[in-house]
Length: 161
Image (cartoon, rainbow, N blue to C red; front, side, top):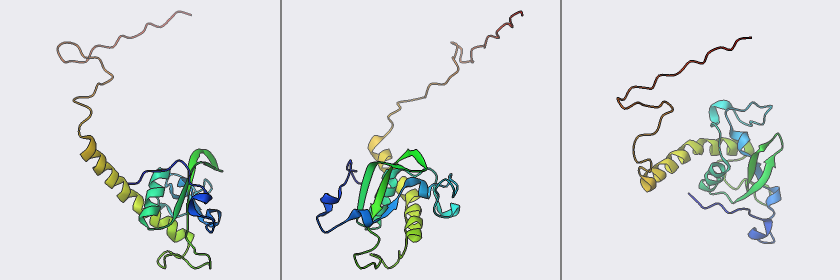
């Protein structure tokens, strides 16, 4: 969808904008495989499996929010989950930017709802762009003899004690 910059700083938005006051979304907030104790913020039926930071960022932009991305930040409950997205959900007065998304939970649910659609679009785009890069049958773990039958496996002899 969009090219992700390495990091957006507060200065990139100008002196009158403070992204530190924006709503933060870490990908574990929307992960169906996590429990509430592990950081999931919405119901499992609204979540997706293993969302990436790029998917969260792109879906937030699809919702027409002002967004900032920080790839070097780690989620405090899981240091392997890298990156966060900041979203300007409220204006300076405290009113929601979009009337149909009045709070964080609704924002999390909307972003999670868009992720499967985003994944389909990316797969379609890669399918059109990439074509068939494999070039044929894939190699299997079993070795094949000249006649097309799987090679016999050798049994190891047990050692004496």
